[in-house]
Image (cartoon, rainbow, N blue to C red; front, side, top):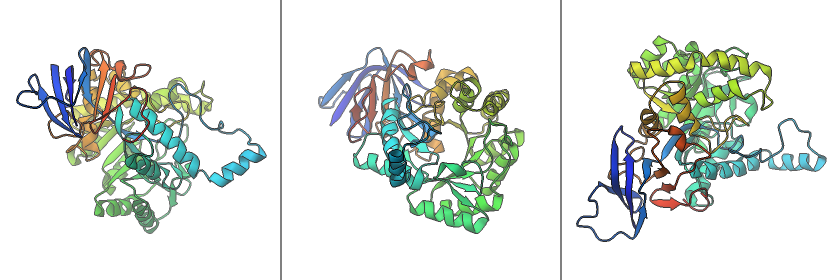
Length: 424
């Protein structure tokens, strides 16, 4: 099946813009782009006129929690946290043991994410019993619609450390325990391991203080790298970041308080900063209205006094940067609103919309090790494409709800706008 996408302005994901350009898709790949792509070729099987629209590579979110939270514009799909269940509801909860709920929620949120133009995401933990792996496989075989998913199969945390209560994280103490947890999560199908190098930022409790030791994290990194898998570390404060770097991780998640030493080492070693402004802006601005405790908003406001400068410094120093929305935090970062991160990096870190799009496409692909197949509009790349009305170079909010993509195409297959159901 060949598809001609005709007449769009094309943002290629590599910093280039091609006005009024045709893109030819053959099967699941981009065959050609330019003003004369039909020359010498048979008539395409299908033509989609995108005149007046902008065509971009499918967006990439390096940090989501697919099986948690709620969807943009919707209430939670399950009972509110803290609500006392009826006897019948308690029995249902016990029977599901959290696994079925996580998988069903993840499948729903995956469809919402794809409909928003995000065609590749990396799940950063918390799903019970590798629920994110189950969602990944359900999408892969066509049981549900959704983006390409890199799953973490849970995550690894010290006993009592940040995220222990989420159910999907394994608590470890010592390198041997960390090594075994890493092996078990890789056995369960993890594409990436998630390590909690430090405490959460944006709360009154030890702003980002270190947790897992260098030795514990190194053991997990060794196991992942032996199997050619990558490792992501939740790290907010400098010492946690430095510990994670020394241990050999591939990406630093958040990195809100990184100092010059951290950023220089990341630039030297090619370790990605996964920028996640969205959750901290949300915690600072709307957490109280969403029912979060008072110890969330004020620390997040203080953190945001530093975080945008960290992102600017990382870019200036040549430390690689990609974007993650942290979608999946209840009532704060809803699934489907992933592109809020692009708006935040423009508004707070001062990058141009074009640069923000690059961070969410080709840079994201490199951070995930997938740049050979996705992240840019080039012949031979996978035909993961989205089109939006207007020009997001002028207004990056065109990528965020309530706006919806005019076209979402995954692997050469168009998905009806607002409806990502069915095999992908």
